[in-house]
Structure formats: structure tokens, C-alpha cells
Image 1 (spheres, rainbow, N blue to C red):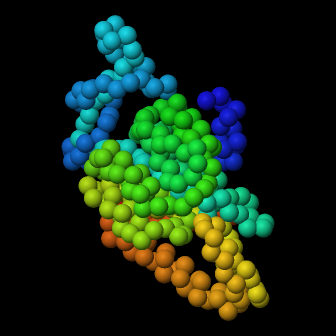
Image 2 (cartoon, rainbow, N blue to C red; image 1 turned 30 degrees about the horizontal axis):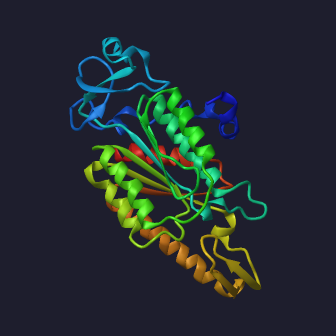
Image 3 (cartoon, one colour; image 1 turned 60 degrees about the vertical axis):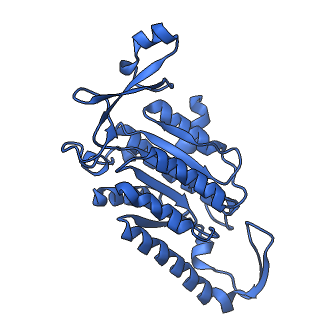
Length: 304
């Protein structure tokens, strides 16, 4: 991807301010020194883990030149220790994520993508493989796990292509989570960015189920300021962003019930994640994106 193509996304965050942050080795690579669990790591003192196809951005030190002569294609040697350090990013690209109220700085999808890109860049800076799953939306495709600057460019390109559309269905969610469950081993980090609104029944349990195998789970709930505050007064006609539901109501009369329902949703997610050692991070599109990025990193460090 040309550098200009990713400038729009990267230009919205001062990446230099992330220089002091990292997914600490002790937090993300739990048990690396004592061999508690498995991780892909390059270097001496580890076991050969096989080959995979070379992708731009891979460390050229691990190209297998003999394999190139035999197979006439570029293969990269992989090595394994006893710690899995991969980071799996999950983006909700449903139709509700494209909404931005009047005066809001941008869509929820853009903010969520920015947070995930920041977390991914920090992880890649430590040498940890990062992957992306997109649930719902159009022009969305998963990005397989890899490392290096080239992987960051691939993540940014994939995030920029996503068009928010449709809804989070049980089938689409199950497909994305099953790929993570198959590929992310013990100790992996899974970070979800979503508004968590209108998700299907059982979605919370499905996501929390990824906590098996000591995977670390963080859900980042991104809300528009109007969704958090419900500022509407008097007669209102409200239309669902993911369907044809139209409701006529009085803003002042339902504000309390709406806020209570939103708080109950947040408590369910928070309690379920805490039970698995995970965390719910709440944020909004008006907040400095560095705030939720730091909270995600702290959540991972605390679990470590």
C-alpha cells in the first residue's frame, strides 16, 4: 500500500506519543522465561516451528534460501517457544457504527478503527504478530497474523476499506470468533471495538468464551455522545440504524429508561469479562483516542 493511502488514518493520531507505551513483555508474553505457554518468537534457543509464505514486511533474516532454491518461492522460517503473544483485533462494522450525531467529530467506525490501529501498532513494535477480524460491513476481509511494518500497512489498508453496513449476525460473529479460537493459542490478546448495541442473543457469551486458554479479552465500547447522553426532548421519531424499526416517543419521558438500559448492558459486559479476567473499556468519539488505547494496554498488563 502506498504511504499516502494510509496517511488519512495515521494522521489522526500522533503516533509519536505512543512511543513510551508498549505491551510489556511480561504482560503480553506471559511465562516466556519459565515456559508456561507457547508463543511464536524468532531467535536462538527456540524450536523450529516450520515454514510459511513470505509476506512483504517480514524480517529478511528468516528467509529460507535453501527452500527458495528447492521450491522457487519465498518461505520464512518460524520458531516457537512456550508463549503465545499474538494480538487479535476485532472490529464491529455494522450499520450502527456509521452513525454520527450533529456536532460529533466523526463516525463510531472511524474512532474504533483508530483505536484498534493504535493497539496493533504498539503490539507490532514489540514484535508480536497481529491479526484483524471484521464483523459485518462491506469490503471487509480478515488480515491473517503477521509481524513488521508491512503488517501495520496491511491493517490500516483493511480498516480504511471497510464500509459499515448490515448487522452483527450470529453466523458472522461465530465465523470470526471461530477463526480466532483456532488460531490464537494460550495467552493471546483479543481486543474488540464495537458499540455493543443490537448484538444478537448469545453474542456476549460467545465472545467471553474466547477467554478459555488464558486468552486476554478486552472489549472497547465506542459510543456517539448522543447515545451516551440521550439529549433529545419532546416528541421524537427514532429509526433503527440496523433495520426498519420506527419508534415515535417523547425524549424526556424515555430518557431515564434508556440510560438505565444502557447501564445494564454495560454492567453485563463488564461483569462477564471480569469473570474471565478481561475488561470493558468505555469511550466515546469525543474522547482523545489515546485514553482508551492506554486503558487497553493497562488491562492487558494487569492480567499479566
